[in-house]
Length: 172
Image (cartoon, helix red, strand yellow):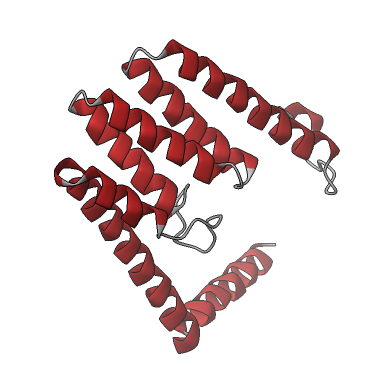
């Protein structure tokens, strides 16, 4: 029994080593990491620029990619939505509520086409930003949209193509 376990561990380790020692895979991983880092720097630069020139920052944010995140270095959002969120948070901190509201609306609009789990995260940010501005009307609208995203997630989980194969004790 012990020799069988040792053999299984060895083959598992050799599989891991082979996948990371493949120069093609390593190059692809490095390239994805650099792209992610570049996008993060762009978001930070745009957010910083929003203090000096709000409209130019909003225009620059609108040009960033807005596709659902994928890959091993994916974040839980898109560069466009992250830029809008960062702009809104900066404007909220500066008490420029009209600009914060504009950036928040742009973030929610950009998130509308994303998967429900990613969309829900941005709606939560919109709720918090609206609450910080004491804009309860917008916060209530974002809460309603967040509930719709939660309902979409529930339907995806409960009635999706892939059945839940987890033991019933692990079900949500």
